[in-house]
Length: 465
Image (cartoon, rainbow, N blue to C red; front, side, top):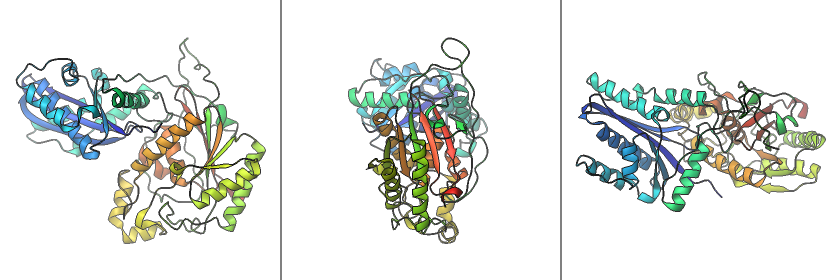
């Protein structure tokens, strides 16, 4: 079943005196990636804690509505009062609360919103925003986005908390439980409670059957600043993340055996005429065929995979260069090719067919925005990395459900491969600019039943030429 689109809203408010100087904070998160989509905070003068909390809720719901008015929203707050009142289980008696609750209820249809109480220590992002707003008010100013350190605080908290449960590689703790809560809310209109994260359990498993050396074990978190590089570059780069054993239920040591993982072998298509020139080539361009070099690469990687003998299914992007690469492999393995629309490359809009330098010359502002934010789309209606991540995450979840315990070859493009690896590592969106994938290069991600994933990279195709 397709993953339900939605947002998580975390909100809080505080008063230094109750009543006293008060402020609120709210954040909208993507439940698939844990990415911060919007932050809101404001100093509201003298007010009570409850008023500030309601103000935070209102701001968070409005921010979610601005992003997508038809999305399902899971609101998480540490205010038992607000959660129970907005869920309809407690009556609203205080005259100051009634108009605020009514305002919050009108922002989105009731069927789209579910409320969940969480302990204060799990609401640190919104709490920090609220305190920043009160600090700004103390200085006689209003909070500005440049004041925010809450996202960093939340990132550190997630890193210390360990990996999430559910679809492997999601960066936010509890992302899978959030999706389940959203789906439950949509089905019943009732409240839902998110689960807790499982402990990390490093593995070698299925991906190791393809590649001998462990390169990275998910989830990890990259802390270095963003590097700038074109999205489509040739060459070889290795991304690593530390792996640490976790305690099992029985004490120190490795976690329990979760059985055979679902392993996705990720194959970038062979070269086209555009590849050596490092031109943007997405799903909105000319759909080029493989070049003679690309056909040789496809044949060589087919032989390499046949020698391994582990691939059981071949799935391809609908674009021609991938279908040709996939068919070469499938023919060698005696398999058929299934086409999966969700594996297509992003649409680069007006940048299709241009080099990085040409885009920089013609669309400098749009290019800089694209480099600075995953939510920015290429000029002319292209697809942003945020939108692509949602699409590819949903495709991953669907394929995992259909191919549990199997080794599946996904023949796709540079951006989908990077996104799948990034999600498996729990790395931030800017990590997409730190990876380069050669044509016909191989990577693999093994997904385990407990939500952990291991990543193997083999990004040297010099022997395939």
